[in-house]
Image (tube, rainbow, N blue to C red):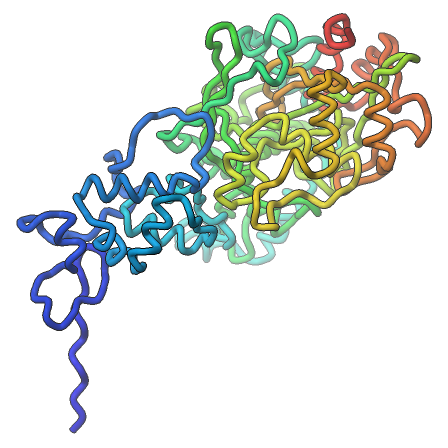
Length: 540
């Protein structure tokens, strides 16, 4: 008879296999770390309780963690637990010489799987090493088990057809629906002569150079109270094939009406807008693109559905009712940044300034290509504020408004592939074109980026960082000589190569015509109007 070998004992704290001669419940490094009398309880899994972790310090930083602090983390852990380098090496499964190299900054760990293992071994939240949780990939549905069997597949097909039709009408009538949504907030301030909702403290008396805006990273944040999975959002989430509601609005988009550009990415969640010593200060934490879209596109869909139920009555556009808007009512105060995930876009009017005057391009966003603001004219570039990849080193390297705009210039103006950090190294903004030339021109005063403030699109309640970049003609013509007529998001309205115009002359008549007669995205209207109001300052 064959006797199976005994199952090796594992350390109750870190899970390491114990040697045969070890009668303790913990391995030697863990025993030295916790002391001779401590129990061998398992390491606390980060995120399972509300107690601060051992490395918790300041609640605010200048940028997100990027993993470059690993040397300090290891030294702090050894100091806290009174460990020698060899003890820590045993705990982590390294040679002592490798731990020494890590602590002296002579070696870096770039492998995300290994960084996650270290975070767990050191009882740290993964984001302390610049790691983000993987984006949700699986499509799940909500609803009770009883609900699943009550509706036939044909009911789901019919419900999805109505849902898809509502999205089509939402994009076809986005400009009118935006006006209707703005009328739901009659006592809220507007950004210039536009529908964009704002607060007096969110729009600054005069445009502010990007360099004068302070960004802060909040290390301890709470999840938003509204996620888009609540009972009040059921009306915007269609039935899945087996009869229960989709769990998230974005899951329905992916399954039923997916645009060509629809990827969930880690992003920067706006948590506070303030003033510090007379300078604007924006504070952020993490969110994802889908977290934002679940709420923002959900409330827009709900409003479109309410209008369609009236038979598309024009009178309802002029006098909308909250009666059919339970999800928007749940969101409540649109400026409560703790209540819902707010991922802002950076919307930039680009002005070419030459001896013949100023001009600017516009972007017609295709509803089949983009999930937000489809079917409208928008300023360009425009893109959500997010790092270029999930890599730890990109979290802090890209936590910069101007760098976000630079990446969008390369993508929207020149048709370059999205800078996704796939090279394994942070993007070199001072060595890679067109970033290098634009940065140099900015240092020389030939590129001048200004921010007007922050607003909210009334239809989606999405955040908008409203800005303008003025570029001297020689720099503009050089950098954008290969400007595309169409990119992955739609068609570009711009001047022909070699012309002395960026596309549309920056004149009062053109600005008023666009504001009054064209289907502009609300943020585009705000940027245009505010730029015209402050033309004396921005044009010099």
